[in-house]
Length: 332
Ligand code: NAD
Ligand code: UDP
Image (cartoon, rainbow, N blue to C red; front, side, top):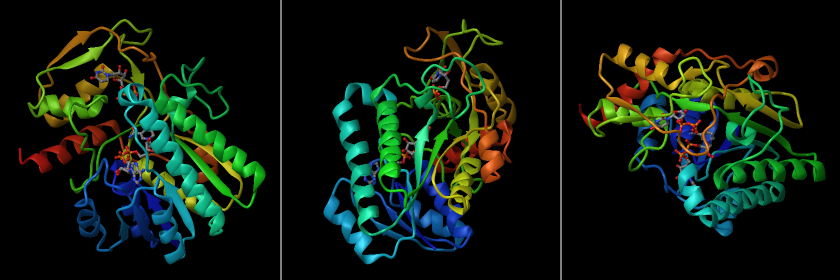
């Protein structure tokens, strides 16, 4: 089976490509490398012993995208490509709407034209806005607070309308909670440009001395220790969820949360990181970050029941693997 992986050089995409190759799938990657590096392809080969077909194309370029569909006999698509920085999306909304929506519409048009009906789409827990209760279930009301989140919700709506109009499509929407960690080889991981927005990349940079101090955004939330609670999931558990979604024999439009089902506070994560890596993370309490919610964690029962999704990795693994990746790639 030949799978087109858009954004396959990125953080989650590259880990998923490894799983696909290990499971015997043929993989074609389309990625414009706007947020990833070409060396990822060699690293994937080093891990799996297998090669992928790669096109450095922008999905917004419909002609180039069509040339891929015309040349390759694609059976299914996993659609990771997109811009993902919440803060940047607030500053540059048009760039986010243009990139994330045009690329997806082009992709879906090509899929329909070339009769490729199976797609797995990367959505996000951000579409739940501020949840009324926890854990979050897939049928909870949806709302967004920033342009990035709105692109995810708009794409979910586009996919829903497309399925209504043409139910040859077989669509799986995966709503990710907070992916962290890295491949245990230390070859693949998260490598954000500039100052990170997300907690784990920031912790790692403080631990390595690249940044002086972690600001903990608020210690007065209604949570056990007052700091924000999230559902951190190892990227390798998350990536395997995509393989399970491809294998799911049930056709239709399906939506699943991919999370561990367990909430962890900022303080708990920092403390665990220090303990397992035997390193100090300087920190200070700062004011709340605008737009943040107190707590967010998934019910993953539906994914467990229908896809056989389970999480193998612990919070310790996530902390170890995140640090290992950065140490290996900065020669510490
Ligand atoms: P990433 O930035 O590492 O990977 C995305 C890849 O898509 C990059 O390699 C980038 O070069 C490519 N890309 C972007 N626009 C493109 C375009 N127009 N044409 C071709 N390639 C393009 O991000 P990631 O963390 O791997 O996330 C993958 C997907 O999962 C994204 O859609 C993201 O919104 C979603 N998601 C991520 C998280 C997270 O915390 N990482 C959480 C929820 C959802
Ligand atoms: N956070 C923090 N300091 C940082 C970055 C994040 O205290 O430098 C907190 C943030 O307030 C939230 C949690 O860590 O409670 C996870 O934030 P992240 O941006 O990683 O994920 P998201 O908020 O998008 O779920």
